[in-house]
Amino acid sequence: MDFALSPEQQDLIALARDFARKEIAPEVAAYDREERFPIEIIRKAAGLGLMGGVVPTEYGGAGLDHKTYALVVEEVSRVCHIVGVAMTLASGLVGNSVFAFGTEEQKRRYLAPLARGEAFGAAGVTEARSGTDVSDMDTVCRKDGSDYVLTGAKMWISFLDVAEWFLTFAHLGVDERTGRKRICAFVVDRDLPGVSVHPLQNKFGFRPLKTGELVLEDVRVPADALVGEEGRGFAVAMNAVENGRLGVATRAVGLAQASVDAAVEYSKDRVVFQQPIARFQMVQKMLADAIVGTEAARLLVLRLADLKDRGERARSYASMAKMYASDVAMQAAIAAFQIHGAYGVSDEYPVGRYLRDAKVFQIVEGNNELHRALIAEGSTGIR
Ligand SMILES: Cc1cc2nc3c(=O)[nH]c(=O)nc-3n(C[C@H](O)[C@H](O)[C@H](O)COP(=O)(O)OP(=O)(O)OC[C@H]3O[C@@H](n4cnc5c(N)ncnc54)[C@H](O)[C@@H]3O)c2cc1C
Image (cartoon, rainbow, N blue to C red; front, side, top):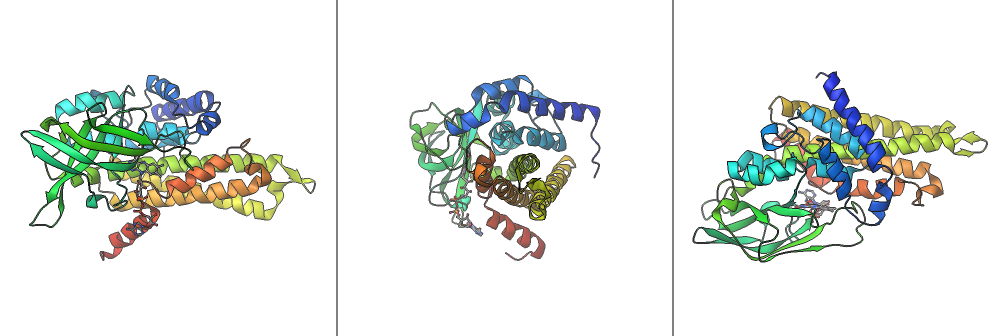
């Protein structure tokens, strides 16, 4: 694997770093506290071309390779991974599903504005009952002429306040031959009759995102809202998991690095027993473990990105990167919080936010227990 970065890659990463420090850092604590999505910051990021990720330029994207994309998202996530998640929408599940399975018209209408950062889409996958077992969804669709009518509800859906459309899934009943639900993927416009959203308030973490319930009450969509083939919607969701997990993993590395940065700075400044606490060996152990963990997680992310750039299958590496990076983010956040002592509890310092968000990273995009199982199954072949 080649770790050398070209001058163009270095310039883009420096641009992202500079943007994050100047535009995001002064605002992030306030919008996290107020549970406010920083739309004005996203617009500025779009103006710099930071939203287009790996989407080809012909569809409004930046046409980046996966390695550059990951490093750019990490730089921004080091200051705020919520801006980071907005940057991954076009390249992850939402945009990549339309890119890989959508018609030309769907790519122009939905993907291109998303990649340019002009409009938002969201992923409506999870349901209240079935949770991680996505294919066991209850949301149904029926055919009426050439239209489909969707009925059901999705839970824990993000971007409810700004999404103009949802990539979502419903089933046409159970296939008698396979015993599996015949899942269909759709793009559903937010303003259609029967679509309503119900955001949760005062979330533990990821607070600037409006996350909650997406209700579909007899929502009628035309046949051209179908993404991919009828009954093959699960393949649409699964196709994008590697890109989705790359995005989550690189944001988690950014968060882990933020914890390391905060812990290092504080341990140099804080003096007790007439010495900086950085001199205590047990503090050094916390720092060293967080630093090494973060670097190792970054290398796993780059390995995943490199496989994607070579066009190779990377399902197991996607699980490894997502699981390890989010576990490291948690470990680094705990260390940073401990090193801040009582001051970690105050919202004068960001480490409380890091800790809350790191916990959520271990749950989203497949909980880490699921990823451990997938990694082991990938090696043993035993399910
Ligand atoms: C802030 C936030 C934002 C989100 N945004 C979105 C979004 O935009 N779109 C969307 O569709 N979803 C979203 N989600 C949903 C998220 O992806 C799900 O929460 C996640 O997939 C887990 O589902 P669940 O919470 O129902 O957990 P459950 O499936 O009920 O699992 C509970 C626990 O059981 C264990 N477990 C479950 N399955 C296994 C297994 N196979 N092996 C071992 N242990 C297992 C794990 O410990 C797991 O944590 C979001 C969630 C949060 C918290």
